[in-house]
Image (cartoon, rainbow, N blue to C red):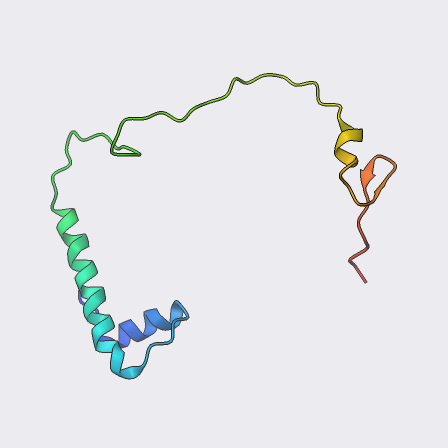
Length: 95
């Protein structure tokens, strides 16, 4: 696949990037270089290689799933600038 200057201009427009007319050939060449690298990756033999998240084997730390007491409504509402009847009060936003 090859990217020409009109395609590079369209990609720049879709990305909302202003690219001057004289810079379009260089941008198209850069896109073609990137696509070349992607094609090289497609040639790599990955049979038998398990997908991994990191280059080092690791596992994310997990916390114990414990039931908490909850029922801290008064403590939570103490942070609110305006609380009424056990709820956060906010200004009306619909006209």
